[in-house]
Image 1 (cartoon, rainbow, N blue to C red):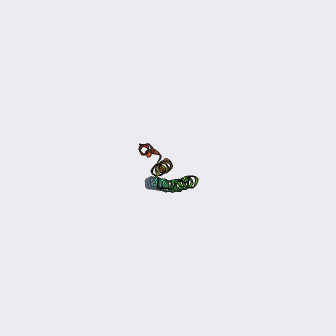
Image 2 (image 1 turned 90 degrees about the vertical axis):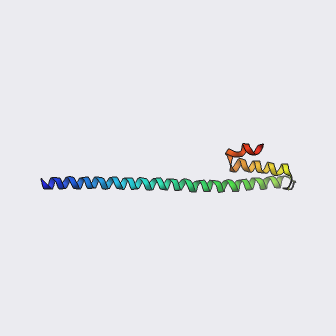
Image 3 (image 1 turned 180 degrees about the vertical axis):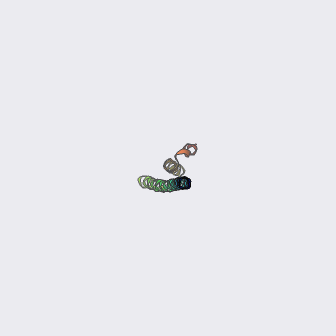
Length: 94
C-alpha cells in the first residue's frame, strides 16, 4: 500500500517536472523567434539602405545633372523611399 502511494507521488512529481520543462522550453523558443525577427528586420533595413544608395549613385552617374537641382533631388528621394519605406512612399509624392 505504502509503495503504491509512493509510486503515485513519484509519477505525479515526474509529470509536473516534465510540464515545467516543456513550458520553459516553449518560452525559450518564443524568445528566440522574437530575437530572430528583430535581427532579420535590421538586416533587411541595412540591405535596403545599401540598395537605395546604389540606385541614387546610378542616377547621378547616368545624368549629367549635379545633385543640387530640386526636381532631380526629389526624384532621387522618391526612388530611395520606394526601396526603403514602401508604406510611406505615397506621402512623399505630394
